[in-house]
Structures are given as structure tokens and as C-alpha cells.
Image (cartoon, rainbow, N blue to C red; front, top):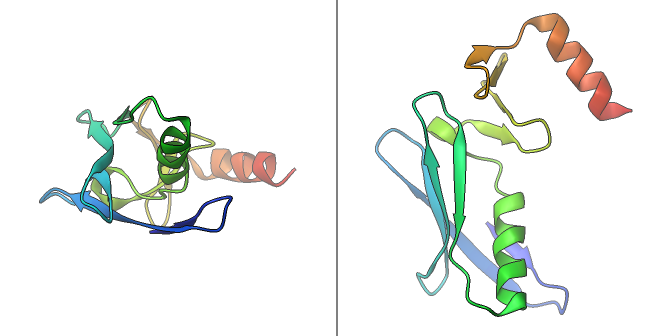
Length: 113
């Protein structure tokens, strides 16, 4: 993942994955772990930020986390709605259920408007 700072500096970040395909962290180009992710058995994500007291570095951590579209098993995670997109349907890790098609349509309409 390549991100640009407000001052125009380009930062490169890399994903860390386990053998199941879960994104377990993000490291910068120096190899420093910036963000760690853990998941329960249903895919609910817990985020840990590894920041110093430097506010600019903390801003970079938040930016890297917010722009990370991947999560549990490498599925696309929609942070706004808190659900995963699994190629043909949505999964809600909070309720441990797949979302029905009508609910998907309502959620998409809410996002659009």
C-alpha cells in the first residue's frame, strides 16, 4: 500500500498475513510494525496501534488502518458498515451471520444517499 502525506512524502506499507490469509498487521518500509489486527473465530476485528507520542506518526497509523480494505481471511472489509464482502454476499461479524439480499440492497442505498 502506498500513501502520500500532506507534505507530499510518499510512504510504503506492507501487509502481514498468517497462513489462513488473515491480515495480521501493517509494517512500514523500515520494517516497523504500525498496526496489528486480531480476529475472533467469527471474524470480528480488534485493532492495536503501535505509535509513539508523535502525532504525525499516529496520523500515519490511522491513515494506513483506514485505507486498509483487507481483513479476516483476506476478505474486503467495509469499515463504514463493519461488514465483510465475500465476492457475492456480505457477512456481519458482530451477529455472526450472512446478510440477506434485501438487507444488502438497503445497506447499499444508505451508503449511496
